[in-house]
Length: 210
Image 1: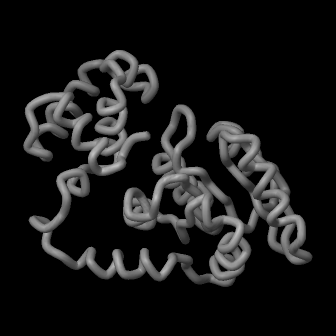
Image 2 (image 1 turned 30 degrees about the vertical axis):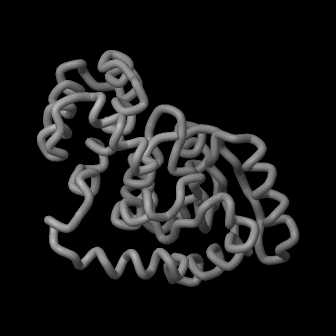
C-alpha cells in the first residue's frame, strides 16, 4: 500500500486529489495538511511513502519546505503540485530535491502515474519538461535574469514584484528589514535593474506572479 500525504492550502484541491486517489486499490491517503507546520506535525506520527506538496503555500515557501523535507525525511520522496506551468518553477523545484513536478491542471491524468513511478524509485517529469531540462546545459549567460537568483532571492523578488513592502516581506519570511533590503540590492544587481517597478514589470511579463 502506498501511503500518501497531501499538503495544499486549498481545501477544494485536497478534496479533488482525494477523489483521484480514492479509486486506486494500492493507494491510501493517510493525511492532508493546509500549511507547512501541520505537514511536519503529521509526518512525525504517520507512516508516509510520498508527499504531494503545493509549491505556493502561506508563510514558508514550498521550495523552503521541500529543502527541509529532504533534510529531515530524505527517505520520503516529494511530488510538487502547482498551478504554475512547468517552465516557471519545475527546474528550480527538481534542483531543490523534488522527485517530480506536475501542474494541478494535469493532476487528474498524471497524478497516479507520477506517484507509482516516484515510489518505485524513479522521477516524474512531462516530455515537455524533459526537453527543458536538457537545455539546462546552456551557459550561464544564456539564462534568463531570474534564473540566476538563489531560491530565497527568487522568493523575495516575487514578493517585491507583487507589491509587498519590505516590512511585510520581513515579517512573512521571519527575517530582519535589513536582510530584506540586502536581498533587494542583490536581486537588482543580478538582474541588472534599477527599481521595484522594473522587477514588477519583468515578473508580469514572464508570468512569475499572479
